[in-house]
Image 1 (cartoon, rainbow, N blue to C red):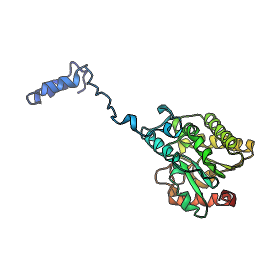
Image 2 (cartoon, rainbow, N blue to C red):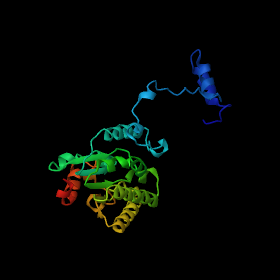
Image 3 (cartoon, rainbow, N blue to C red):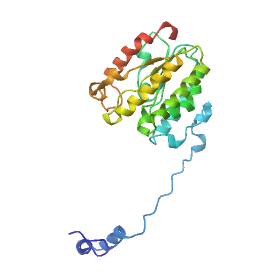
Image 4 (tube, rainbow, N blue to C red):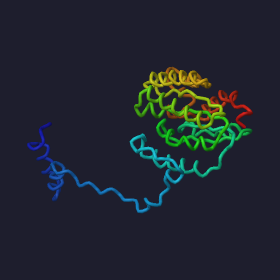
Length: 258
């Protein structure tokens, strides 16, 4: 039987069957007094923890990260990039987890490769750290970014606008570099329309700037989603997916990027 709290038969029965002291438990459950909130934990090492500022990168605001664990990941990767020497040539792969988790140097053992991917990153996060790519001075750049923005809720026009800014900054800082803009990969079906809208805008952006747009989407889609044969979680790709990706990019990996 369901009755309102305060005159509940269920509450009375519960009190009757509880052992001594049970009434206090019931009172706590139905009390209007909210439970005490624990004070936030203070990190005693906060002043000496690594920071992006230590390598000249302004930290992305916390509100621009999708998950709490993306914050330390971003700091760890950005501080790592800040310790590496300039490439002065070679190939830079730039993006989020899809790039980060690829073993590009092993995939192209004959080329000098650096992986600038950061798991969880967005177009906003990349804009903050783009100076690190420019300062490395690669000869060739493969850029794929934006799928996390799709999930984050940014509009296709905003995502594309951020990528346009990224491309313009890369060109200004590295005028002799060859830049390839890669499409977003498929995700679950509910994201299909938005991903395709972003990719259409990416193609326009690349065409307008005379850049090569590499459309990966049709090579990875099956029935409106990321091909299940290439993924275990419907967003990241497996070894089979990276093998397909490598095959698609191989014609663009030229002596200029070595």
